[in-house]
Length: 66
Image (tube, rainbow, N blue to C red):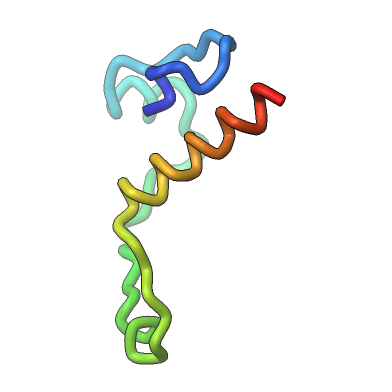
C-alpha cells in the first residue's frame, strides 16, 4: 500500500523477510498474536486491518495535499 504513492518520498524495501532479519532486525520476531476476544466481548468492534490501513493511507494523502 505504501508503494502505491502515499508521498513523493522514495522508500527502500527489503527483498525478503530473511534479508530484513539479517541486515536490520535487532531482535528476532516474537510469535505473539493479537487476540481481540476481550474487546469483542466488551462490545468494541474492530474493522479488518486491510480496511483500516486503506482508510489511514487515504487520510494521510489528504493531509499531505493541504
